[in-house]
Amino acid sequence: MEPVIVHGGLFYNEDCISGAREHLQDNSVDLIITDPPYGIRGDTLHQHYNRDERCVIPGYVEIPDHEYADFSVRWIREAERVLRPGGSLYIVSGYTNLYHILHALKQTCLQEVNHCIWKFRFGVFTRRKYVSSHYHILFYEKPGGRRVFNTECRYGLSEKTDDGRSPNTSDREDVWAINREYKPGQQKNKNELPRALLVKMLQYSSNEGDLVCDLFLGGFSTAEVAIGLNRRVIGFEVSEEIFFTKIHKLGQLKPGGLLDNLRSPLVRRNKNEGQKWTARERAALASRYAALRARGRQRKEIVAVLCEEFGRGRFSIEKALQKR
Ligand SMILES: C[S@@+](CC[C@H](N)C(=O)[O-])C[C@H]1O[C@@H](n2cnc3c(N)ncnc32)[C@H](O)[C@@H]1O
Image (cartoon, rainbow, N blue to C red; front, side):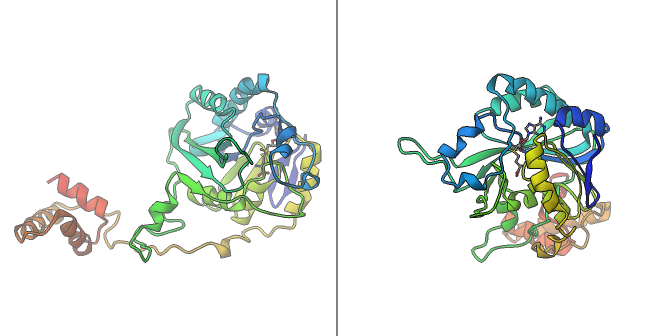
């Protein structure tokens, strides 16, 4: 089948397993962000969510319970094949079939980087138990290459909040509190992911021009955000109804249109960052450390002084001190 091409992205109204086999080469994709059907008999979801079902685009293809395990093995094997060494994979999953996905991942060479929790406030209503308000985000990598992880893409390591905390560390914690989008009256896919969640994954794990793949496009939210951030996209959606309702909207996007609205991190580069330590510099560090220690200064304070004086980060100073 021929793809629909929008802003250079290739979109296939096809099953992603046979489609990937036919259209995607081995080791060709930099990043996969995907959100497979949850296998929770989606048609009854509306009974739990307080939402207007008339706005949900029909045609969502669910996977029957008894097929879920095998289905997960087959699509995850394709994800493994097409990802380049060093490429990253994010899978968003509910908990019902999480074990099938984890089991399928175990059968590949892919390695876990983080198991994140996406916490949101738009919970399923319950009365006699806790309110469900999270999904799982499985962040894996394909070994054998350098993985992109843009540590300072959103907050600089040296930034501090007014109460002295590091926004960089908070942003990189493995629990992400991001609310679902509330779009009253607008047409949307069942389980549409919020843009803020996708922006985060794309910023940390890809660069402009990288090839991003979504095997289960649904409402095309991954594709939309990837185009908005100037990434190249390829994707699959098996439902004809969903595919053709959503694809025309992609054309209205401006490639790179989200870039201007991104927060600029305050990145302070240490003067000697990335430079090899010379023997002379190591000796100077050791003697300066000893001198400060002799004056009764605490190690933490000393390291802060040495960072300034030697133009290096704390980690680099600590490592050099250990090697003395
Ligand atoms: C959880 S939704 C994706 C939601 C999407 N991330 C979004 O934000 O809108 C899963 C989608 O996968 C589609 N799907 C189911 N089986 C598929 C298959 N074998 N190949 C491609 N798409 C499939 C469903 O029709 C559904 O639209």
